[in-house]
Image 1: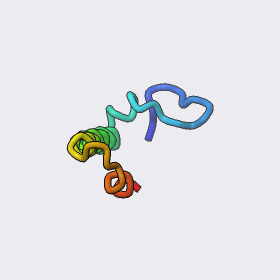
Image 2 (image 1 turned 120 degrees about the vertical axis):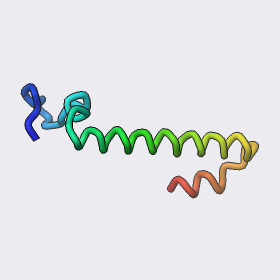
Image 3 (image 1 turned 60 degrees about the vertical axis):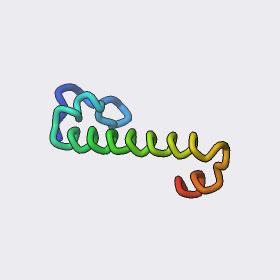
Length: 60
């Protein structure tokens, strides 16, 4: 994948550059799925009233 600018010295591609590619669309979808998962975990935490045993083990 060619980037619009020089890659930084570490070799990582800027996510803003990657988001313009098909791979970037995949990254956006994964990030959206993670945000949805976090929302469900937060709702589970709120409903469990401090009982974190099941939620913590499900995250691992």
